[in-house]
Amino acid sequence: MSERKPFLTAKAAVTGGPYSQAIIHNGLIYLSGAGAVDPSSNRLVLGTIEEETQMGLENMRIVLEEAGSSLQKVLKVTVYLLDMEEYDRFNAVYRSYFKIDPPARTCIQAAKLPFGTRVEMDCVAAL
Image (cartoon, rainbow, N blue to C red):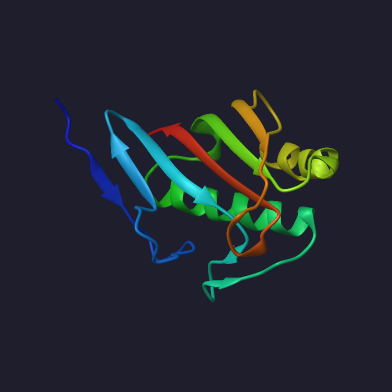
């Protein structure tokens, strides 16, 4: 049985919450929610749905690449949107990151997201 291994990189946003940035287990990496935190300053950056989506996907990309994976190896994404009216605008940015054979995905409207953000995403990817 393979061991569960927490993964952390300082190159992506680090919130300091009581959870791992990612967990590696059995050839997969499970990322915690990625949102609108600037990885260079570790500061929250509230903006449009497009800006927050891009920031979250960049954080996701950085963690995956630092762990030896990539966006192309993502198997499943879960998206939490504050407002489903922004779904099409979210998708416009999301599509630019997953152009060919996008991963499986679930999108849920959340009543509220941490720190007033508009979107949060987590994922599972192959290593």
